[in-house]
Length: 211
Image (cartoon, rainbow, N blue to C red; front, side):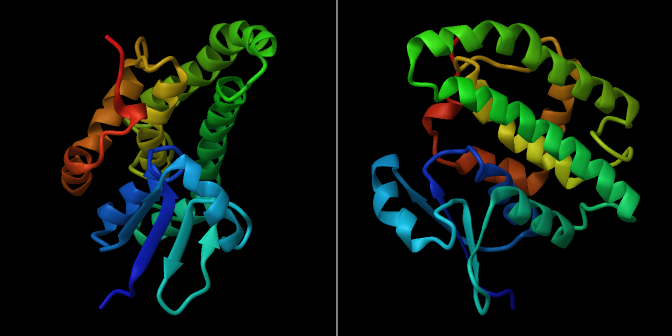
């Protein structure tokens, strides 16, 4: 019998969705503990590092940091590399995707309007196309996947994060013009357990695209 598992994160996709995807892919029952942004100040001091997502597994100490948790679950799901070199290739892609996310988040959450306007052009004219075009090439060259020519947790991470990237893209589909990335996302979303989860998950603000 699998140990009791609990995931604590905001009521949104963000850094928690790849963990949810992998938990359901594993068939692992878990408590999806979501909270609203205004509750964070109260919850933050109760976490080990003042960070979420937070994974709690019965009999173990709580663990934070999204990439550490996602990598662990990827291994548990059999979606890691066959050797350390393949793991390196997966990690490379994941860190590239996370760098894209971080660049977009710096712009999206910037409160100074003048600075935000300053960041906008370079981000959407240079940074985003740079990363997406290269990720597109990786999928084309890797049998429809991002690394090693086969399904890995990097693919799940990318697909799960894509809705959050859409939100930071003005709630518009960010993968327009990148057919291989679109096909990869569709492939992950069509995996039976993930498909079932996606159909039932809460419709949070990041999932509401503009026409």
